[in-house]
Image 1 (cartoon, rainbow, N blue to C red):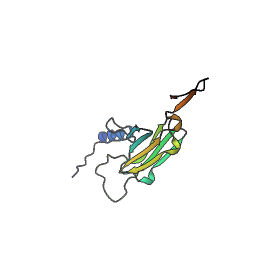
Image 2: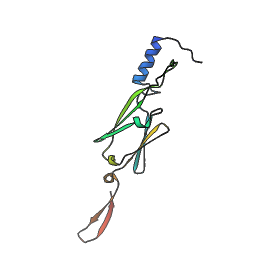
Image 3: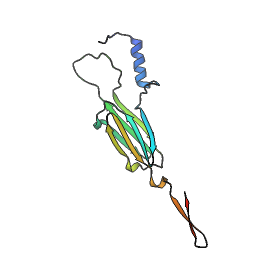
Image 4: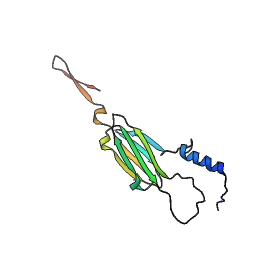
Length: 141
């Protein structure tokens, strides 16, 4: 059983932590990002978020992720509230070396996963060099 006490300073501290975050629990969506071969993967933790509330936008090189965790309504008394609710938003500036037209997104187990392929123009390629004698040599770029 939870015991509810009234402490206005504790409630103020909790509100401040929810708005500004702490080092242990940031107020924004926690994120991991890594590269595997020719694909960048970005994962956002969004537990308790309905998949249809997730909105992804790309404008130029800026990826915006928005999601909403709605508050429960009903005839009940709230005993503890530590999970943030409402609208969450996060923006990432992505480099020119990524193919933003081919982003794939999936949501499973409270984790939003984005897979962003490396653009063809950013991949290593061989450039053929010719000499005046008609000999051809490939140089790796």
